[in-house]
Figure: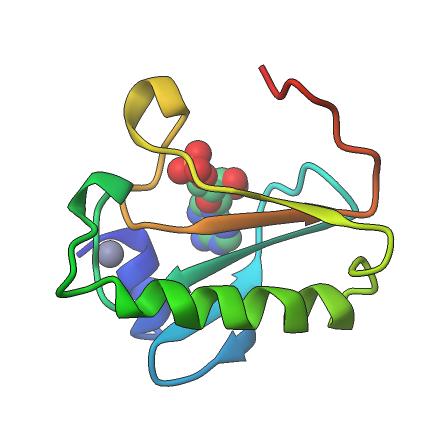
Length: 112
Ligand code: AMP
Ligand code: ZN
């Protein structure tokens, strides 16, 4: 079972900042900004390439949760960045889809 599935199953004790039927969110263990949390689907989907019409409903849930949590973290007004890395050139290290939400500092563009 992947590390994020273990977090979903409460086999790794991570403090969740949000949980519902479809989604959990928690602070990134290695934050790159004052606010850096991850929003993930409860179902295991390894990469963005595995999103299909059968499982894409979780995306709407994730994007409902993101602005709520950004507001709770106090970064909604100044702004934040949402990042999803896919496979090696995308910089993906954990192969369970997740959306990074990064705020509390000025993000740079281009990101690479
Ligand atoms: P990515 O490179 O997009 O796959 O990012 C994976 C992210 O997961 C990294 O930012 C890690 O710091 C984060 N991460 C890995 N393990 C944990 C954990 N146990 N709790 C919180 N964040 C984690
Ligand atoms: Zn998983």
